[in-house]
Image (cartoon, rainbow, N blue to C red):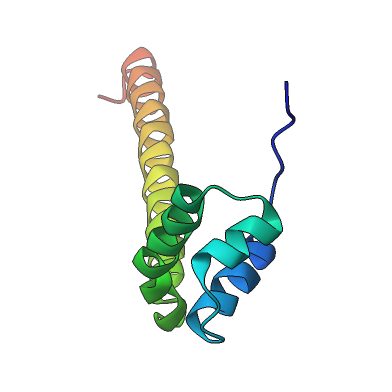
Length: 101
C-alpha cells in the first residue's frame, strides 16, 4: 500500500502558482509531483474560495475575539449576580434570626 504524501500549505500554493502565474500545463505539474489532476483542481478551488480571507485585514479575527471577550464578561457578571443573591439571602436570614426584620 502506497503511503500518502502530505503537502504543506506553502507547497500547495507554490504548485498552484506555477500553473496560474507561469502558465505551466496542469498535466506537466501533476506528472512532476505525481499528483492526480483532481487533487490539483481541488486545491485550486479551495485556494480561490478562501482567498477572500487574505484581504479581510483580520476583521473576522477581531470580531471573533471581541465576541469571545463579551461572552466571558457576561459569564463573569452572571456569576457575580449569583454570589450577590446568595449573600443577600443569607443576610436576610440572619436579620430574621436576630429579629431585625
